[in-house]
Every structure is written in structure tokens, then in C-alpha cells.
Length: 130
Image (cartoon, rainbow, N blue to C red; front, side, top):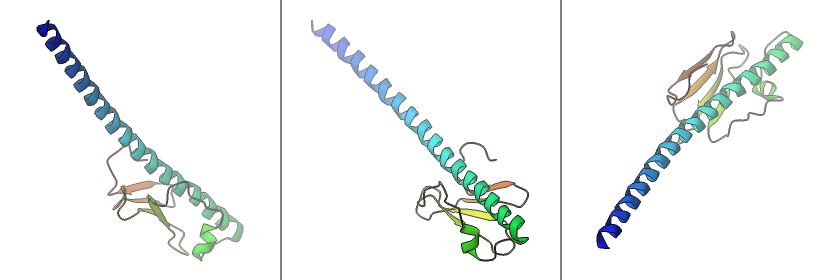
């Protein structure tokens, strides 16, 4: 009787260990997925902001001069705890998103140039760059 209980406990311990291992792997994969999605959202925000800046340029024949003009109608989907957005002034480009200090994207800089090219610098190695 004792041997049967010992074998049962051993199988239960192995099953629990495997479940914990698989859960750890799943959480790591999910975390990478979340980071990738947040980076892509910030890149999409830059693209949307670019459309607003270009629309202003088409209507007025110049890029927005003041940052308040550039921000008109722009409401980023990115969380403020992830990225801050910066406008370069009368030149219009590059548009920049900088990872918030102390956050998961600290040191990460996303840029969008006048030709629509995205660049990443210092960002977590997740997904693939656009």
C-alpha cells in the first residue's frame, strides 16, 4: 500500500512540475506578444500623426510651426506610461516616440521619416521592425 501512495505522489509531483514549466513558458511568450503589440501601436500612432501633419501641410502649404498645431486632432492610442511623442517643429520630420523613463520601453526611440520609413533604436528585441 505504501509503494502505491509513493508512486502516486511522484506522478502528481511530476505533473505539477510540468504544469508550472508550461505556464512559465506561456507567460514569457505572452509577455513578448504584449511588448510587440505596444511597439506596433506606437508605430501606428506615428503613422496616424504623420497623416495629420501632412494634411495640415496640404491645406496650408507648410508644416505646422507650433507643436500645438501638430497635435491638433492627434490622440495617441499608446499608453502615456509607454511612450512620449515629439514634434521637430517647422521641418515636420522626423516624428519621434520615446520610451518613458523607468518604463519597459526606457531607452527605446521610434522614428518616422518623411518617406514613411520607421526606425527603432534601443527597443526590446520583439517582433520585427517595420
